[in-house]
Length: 420
Image (cartoon, rainbow, N blue to C red; front, top):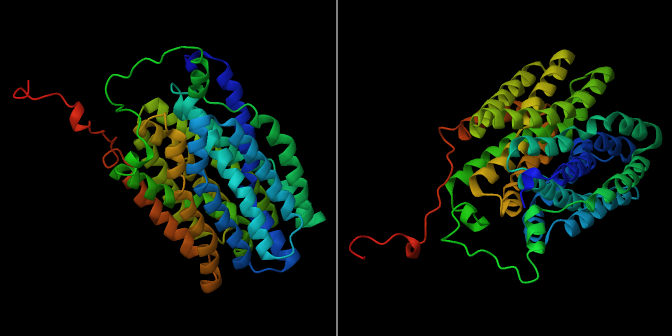
């Protein structure tokens, strides 16, 4: 089955983009709900932001497991279960009376987010081997930019009806718009396996597979650790604004009109970062060079934000520009994992790699809130992440990050002349 010649893949891709738009609410609308919880229930921001840290851990560490089952049995069942969990998380949050309930319900929904995110990214990798960068950019664009159309209505719901009612409304929307598309998920390899029934014999493999790496083979390569560390650093920038942009604006006394512009513009910048970066990487045929440029620019704009955050124009400009380049981290990593370690086990392999986001979430959520309470400023987090992104740019550069080569088992190597 030649996946590059089927129109079916575009239908699946569009469905995945829509699903990603709605599950992104957990991440890129969180600052609105966090502020609402602070206002309505009078909980401290440190207490509230623990929910976001738990989100990043749940949404990332589920992916190796959901990815394994999706690669083995197909993604549809995983997608349906994930969709139900995502909606249930918000519906249950509409009933909370304690932080423990918030942590439990938000984590439950976060597990569904991770399941759907992993198989959606893998859909692009598996169905679009010819346009992997662009397809992955489009899917992750949905996750990055989806909340651009949601944030202002959500802010109005929280202000006018209370945060619990807003949780209820959003949970209902998730049920309506996510569940129908979960039935579209499938992988081309899985379809091919189904078609090989009724006595068809698989062609015998000649020699070991040197293209596709299993997860434990991948973890033994130093390249993976370079990818993982750089992923953690740059993901923390993208997560910082999802978790903190509204409290950050409040701390810097940014006018409400400017914040409203940022709430729409920064998710769009985040989303377009993935499409632009994916297209550039396919066009110049150098994934590492693209990653280096985007990471370096994200770092420079974060440093500029740290220097100008109290100025409304500087705040808006550099939040948006930072996201325009940091957002590419979520398109770069699934494609580079597919490039380096092959498409066959890509859902599992990227699921393990995606756990880097959990450490980014720890930095952008709880640690940033703690630094704010301790020092009364976001400057330490912003400047630290800016410098970190410059280091990440060096790590992913084509002069440092090289494609690994799999060693053949000794039994399959060609015999020496003396052995013949």
